[in-house]
Amino acid sequence: MRRVFYIALLLVNLVSFAGAQAPQPLRMEIPVRSGSSPVNYISFGEKGICMFYPTSNDGGKDSISWSFVMIDKNLKEVWRKLIPLHEDVNYLKGFGRNNVIYLLFHDTQRKTEENISVFFIYPAKQIITEHRSSIPEKAEVVDFEIFNEFALIGYNQRKGKPGLIGFSLITGEKRNFDIVDKNDALLLDVTADTIHQDIYAVYKTQPSSSRNVLMVNVYNSSSALRRSISFSNQQEKKIINSAQFIPTGNGRGFVAGSYGYGNRNKRNYDYYNDYYNYYYYDSFFRRQSTYDANQDNTPVSDGYYSASVSDSSTGKVQYYSFIDFANVYKYINDPEAIRSRRKAEKINKNESAESSGSDREYSFNFRLLMHPLIAASGSYILMAEAYSPEYHTMTQMVYDYYGRAIPSSYSVFDGFRYTNAFVAGFDSSGMLAWSNGMEMRDILTTYLNKRMNLYPDNDEILLFYNANGKIAYKTIKGTTVVDNTSFTSIAPKRSTDQFVSEYLGSAEYWYGDYFLASGYELLRNNYLDENKRNVFYLIKLAFR
Image (tube, rainbow, N blue to C red):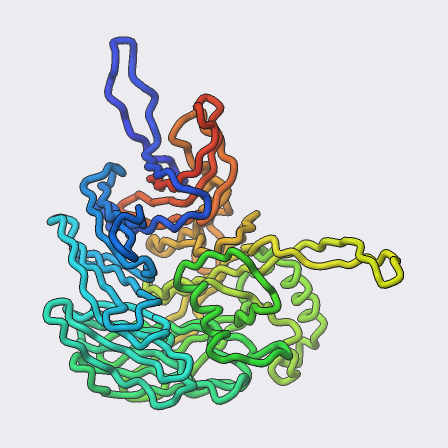
């Protein structure tokens, strides 16, 4: 039976003998200024939602007060606390585990000790504690995990080795994990296996712009290196752009990510900056106020790779081009991809792309926003959203020395165009089991964020995203499309509100049959004194 999204409603009690008020959508709004600092939140199942955001500058010298607000499953405020934080702190990552929420902040300007803060939030007891440690000055945080009572922080340095530290949230004890002695190495992922008491660090070394080596280090709980895992079949010119690891116990695991074809342009290749240009847009929120294509070396990707890890043998890397994904040309609307298809069709079908050396001629070259690798329904599922910068051309007249008019054209950046999502499922041996995807329509924005999401439901997968005041959703089952794309409008708080524009829209699974949508909207209401307002909203959706 086909299922659809519904707006969850707040049923209002009778207010008079004449009848009841009309049911109102379960929607929460916070007034914001356009382009202001983001409102962050962590969904916490039936326990509710933890919101946190900078509120005011009255926290003291060089400080800003942040509001930490706990909201129940009916989007009603339960409690609120104000905590002063240094004005240069950036929120990086957070998650809920058992009954606790963990948040990571990095003070990018603090040169002394304690430039890392981990917040321990126990919502049921209204407890918030801050725990500090430090990483080297100007180091860039890669990942954050909790292992027993230890916070694990992985980082990279421009002119130094990558690092991984652990510090106790109880005693403050600090542990250092040695990764590799090479300065050209980049840490990609940190994973903790609390069941088998192992810690995994995935990294790569890159001797040149056309060759890299993927590795996984395994540590015990005391930070001692137990094993370094290498992989066979790592091919020349296929550069690893991202990596995520899932442990499966007893020294086994699975690693997957995206790859591209090395440095495609003639500009000088900056190994560190090119990676971080990509990584920070992929993993951490960063608003894009201006854009210069000449300074954009974001690595482009052409497909996914995967490899399994066993306790006795070296894993083999398998590469899977997006060109070979099922239904790929049904959900890609990027003109460049269509041109790539035409080039691919001209190649002799009896000659492999690898042997002909033509991979680069018809590969997709997508910029990707990678999502977490998950294990569900007997598969390891990897998803990424594809986007590209978009411009329009302006022409104006200029005059030469003799006063003659000469037309001069230049490009103006309009924003990033989202095109589609790639979804793939891998079996336990690391082989591609199925592939599919979903189109993303009419999304052009100067703010990059992960909009698409997925929810595994038995052997089917629901794909969905929030954009332009609507939830788009589609159901797939492996390579089969079960239900084509449908749309549900996001209900306003007042029936007289009119949608004008939005940005940073997102949606995610919450609990039970319920999902959560959020974003920033400009609304118009001619029945109010101030007929326009900018809001951050949360709205509860049911999928039945």
